[in-house]
Length: 181
Image (cartoon, rainbow, N blue to C red; front, side, top):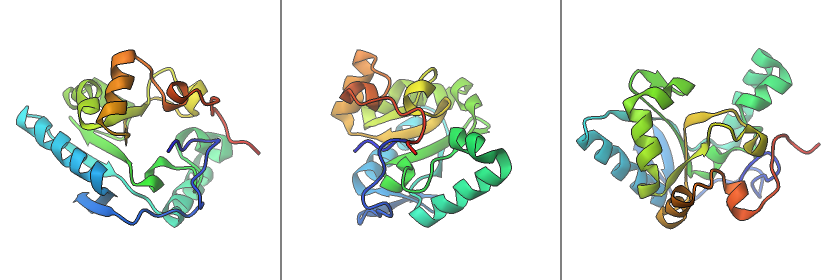
């Protein structure tokens, strides 16, 4: 499932049936939750504290977040920072925002030991950094080193090993730099 500015969820208010707690009041789909728990435990064993800062968001929650972003940044600014409701990976239950090393949901996460560990190891648990540096013209989002998407170990490892940075590129999908219409 690829969700981006050209590909919405169907139905638009999709809600997965298999959500499981991953701590902090956040939920992911069961397979992604197991993988996240394993990834955070391995990071902790390496002396790193990585926390889930956001995960599944229902349609109405994303609707409020997007409206707040529009009020703060205007529509164009909001669309660079936040997904429209129904177009958010968080609504799939397969995406999470991570924090650690004193940086939470900011680009500085990439410079922390925690962020570097995630970038180097997330694929081993089935995650990829979904909005990599330099991919805004493809994904429509600025670099988000904290945003990971569960795709399964096989696909995440193939993306990592081949250096293909985005799901759009891997699946040969058109770039989604902005919303259609």
